[in-house]
Length: 631
Image (cartoon, rainbow, N blue to C red; front, top):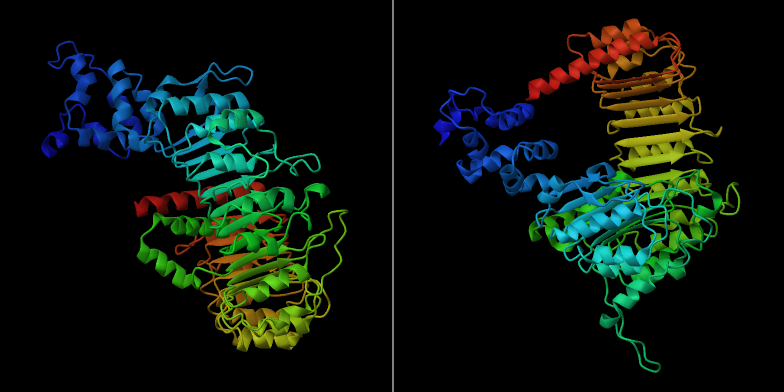
């Protein structure tokens, strides 16, 4: 068999060239033109019946979905047989309005027949992109008629208004559905009815990103037609008779990124999610209209835990979601659901500190929601807490800063032995409270502090001696009360653990401080954002031989003589740096040992766009060469 495939005279030899899919299609589609050949046209077209199944399956597994569809045009036989050999290609499918025929005025009659031919029970992941309501209903009907029973289903910017009709269509393909996602959905939804439609659902995600009238999410949209259709399976309520409790859901990950009334909408959902591990709720963009902002009407940490005592991850009112953290917890929820082996799950739980208690909390203040509502939850879970992100909020009645909460009780948390990440942005509490809190965090590795009232010298001593595992520090300082130059120099000169350092705003970085930063040989990432305006020399950067990423904002010191020597850098971003020219950047790019692959330049007056384009072309060429070497 191997000998036949490797024969140079084999007309199907090009099929096994995995590096050139276009040649594959050309070979499959081409019929012999020489009338004197001993091989008939049908032999070329019907080779699917002559080669072993595993050979043909290997051939088509190397094609793309579009390549597969093009091959199906060759003949009726190929139209019928290719989908049987290409099931691996159609485990995941994305459907857009362009995938349809007879698509007029937003109404879709059918999918392309070749796509329909490739559908079936093997399809596991389906994404619908920017479909109108008629298109959504038509596609759901087609998926059902083809026997599709996907594991994941996502609607991205789709129009879904008529809830009864949608729920009926969803029910026809939901027997095996475990993950259901609505992204950038601009209409209210009957969440409970949709969840009831999917008996095996473990992940539900809903996000809204457009205008909605005030209080539109306070009530469930009508589903009377659906209730009538399902009437035979629902017991009728009889006065005086206690009705049985509704069946609980199996949901372990729940994302509701819109502002729901906590009693009218959120509580009925959480009451039926006793297995919930991860809750992402009421996270909106900071520039949203004021009536969309969360408040005490939509956020209640105590209620969240009352109905879902197994919660380990909560993100609410965070002004934009933390994608990396969410993806980690989505994977964890999948493991909890039972998709992984017992050994790996036990190892994961051991690394995360067990399977009970709050692990991560990401939240901001809101109107009527602040320290008095957040700190009690922190006290209950301080022994298991591993990541905490707090921030100042805005009032839901106007765009003014909300009344500051009393965060002084933070220093009373004394059992933060597992806290590794702490972020605090724009909260108003003094240096004494901050120092007292950090004293209780011996395992802290990641610290972000923006716009605190004060950062005393004592804070740097605590970071050096108490939090001796710190690897990332992000300080944003706008107030006048900052550590002295001597304290900064002492801290940077003696630190041996920091690998990522970001200093923002206040112009406290002087030449002596910059020299101290240059002594941090272990540093891998350095960001100076509006903090080094008055530094006169940047020669200290030459000492950072492990530095991979450098970001400088509004540095007035000359960079030409320094940048060309930093050949070990992989990424550079310069914003508003006046003393830098193309000559140093070209010398850096052309360095024989250079490792630079990303360069971002903004508002640096001495650099012309034409030269930036030339440098970017060289970097692109270097990246391509590196990819070729890895192959």
